[in-house]
Image (cartoon, helix red, strand yellow):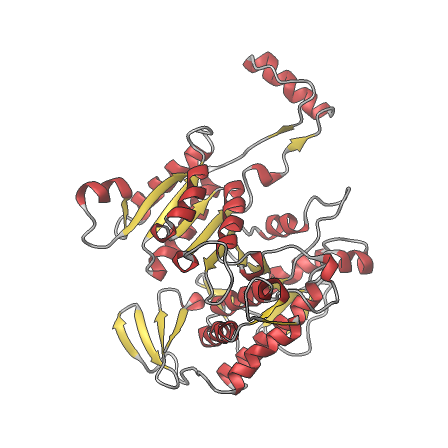
Length: 458
């Protein structure tokens, strides 16, 4: 149990059994509202998530929210940027969501986000990148972008293994390089260490491969800089091919083999691309890429660059996933100048909430949420960051933008199946169709129930 944080008066804890989530009808979900504009974002997000769950399940399911502290609010109330109680709560309840957090200037903690990932062993950042119709984009064909970035979270240059140039540690390292390896490093150079392990790489790539198999994706691309960093990024690439051949040979085929012999069975193609070339590829040939598996640094850069192609970080959801825990988050910063003004775009955090609902296996509510967003954008109702880029758009406040979902649902423009999974038509042992309202239907992948994919089609 959570030792020092009072449990809510209602709700039940999520548990795990046989490596699967056991989700009650009233799960307790911790939330961190975030710094800067975070409280504005969270108010809108919470209302949309609650409304989607109510609309989908008519009171049979509900989320019990539990606030936990991190960032400036935590520091003001407890003197700590990341209290132990917060880690304990997320560890116990397994699934959480958070707004953006500031990185404190000065000592104490390098990054709250990095600390959360490390302490909860959240080894994969998962960033789906897909264009939403109606969102302004700087590229001609944003509709061609439909990728999911899996970024290793705990290794590479983000481990914090670096030393200021005049520190004793830097001096000692320079001495080691000079005396043991015969390598001279300038005395005015700060030093850092890049760490990429077989264990860390393979569990990240395994998650990407498993996702591609479960979701019927067409390719997995290993993105790296192995032409220069042969024993770190180059090893990441090699371990990826090794894992695909050893553990997923029934489902995958290497790109070289597919080009030489063809791919008549439609297996998932395993590709690899040099990092700098990949930035060009996603601009010129985005339709050729699907799931991307990346080391930490490249994954950080690439996921943000891809978000720009579909409208920016304001519409980009994200999650940090581990073996046991999942933490869903806004992908952007705190935007402190907009704090309390009810102007910030809540789409990133709301879509991260959609990911959370899918993770729970509540795909009906997730489908309603996304459909509500698309309907709202189709009416050109947007927050000011998007509205100023589109002629004829109506700029609204954060809270008003969230109300667009409720308006769509109230008008009854779409609905959800009332019986799942007892009724419906199986297209295959792994794919099922369920009826919705007004002639629509849901297409569902059943390979991973707690992350079932619900796509509403009219």
